[in-house]
Image (cartoon, rainbow, N blue to C red; front, side):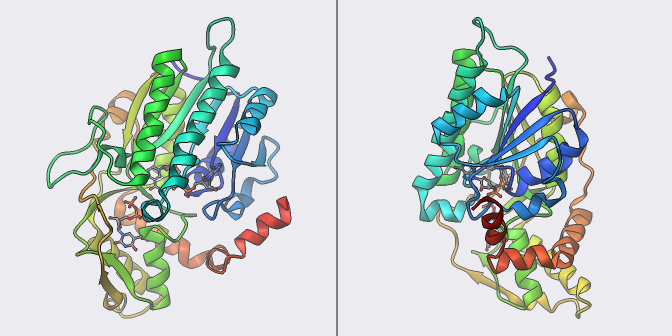
Length: 354
Ligand code: NAD
Ligand code: TYD
């Protein structure tokens, strides 16, 4: 059964994927009202949303998804038909340093949103045309050796505090479906790359450091494998699943672009050299192998064939073209990058929201 959103709560819409989602859907669906609830942690950046900040169908609310009072009030006042839940602590390395922050936002925050949905959406014993969309990760499935791919039926086996907290949130979303009949969909996707990603994650970090002539920290031997998905392809998949995915369904989203980390870094090095008109090979000399991440998952790979066959999703970017455009984007959006690197993006939000 398809879902027709009228009023959407987007959580974490100032982050990397959430902002790409809002930039696409706010102008595309002028009759749908969007509320972006974001705490604006270090990862939230309102500069990402400049293109839509004045749109009539868009409102920003600064707040915490784990704040039950605020969340319940928003649901009551705004009568959302739909939640698209991106907000999370999302960086594995940070989860190793501060696991409880991940439990709080990813587990307690998700439970808070679900419970408000259960209470507000239940009417005369049934839910109408409402939907809770939970954005999750392939990391909940654990790691693969050299063969095989994750699919919707892969058992959960998370290893990091990040992936364990995301697994917990996925289980809660399914529990609300199975116990109360709350209409939900979940997607689990692979590593995203593209515009507006905070430069702590591999791709933007390496672009910035390669361009600045700094050492490029590759964990271990760079032999770990990730699958790379362009964020715009992911956002297209989310919009499709939101409207046409099956109630209670799970969808795996992947880019069919498996690469060893070292190969990703070398690709970025060469693209940065080309873009800066330096001799190709210059940036590769900056590669520095450093101590491995504890509990580092060896390989992730996704089989997205259910999404392709059931909903007709096709990605528009190849890894080569997508990464070329991404390198260009970071090198030509100096204003955005400088504000992120020197921390002044925080001033922009302080100016607007105190
Ligand atoms: P991000 O870290 O860039 O953004 C997270 C956003 O959530 C930020 O704007 C932050 O301010 C906000 N936030 C954090 N805690 C909050 C709280 N308590 N209340 C309200 N807002 C809060 O993350 P992202 O890369 O855009 O990821 C979005 C979602 O996609 C996450 O759920 C993540 O687990 C999932 N995901 C990401 C990737 C990836 O490659 N980036 C891959 C798979 C799944
Ligand atoms: P990351 O972008 O943190 O995403 P995730 O851990 O969710 O996959 O890291 C991608 C891969 O790159 C992962 O195998 C760890 C590795 N990595 C490095 O080698 N060096 C770095 O500085 C970072 C941030 C990651």
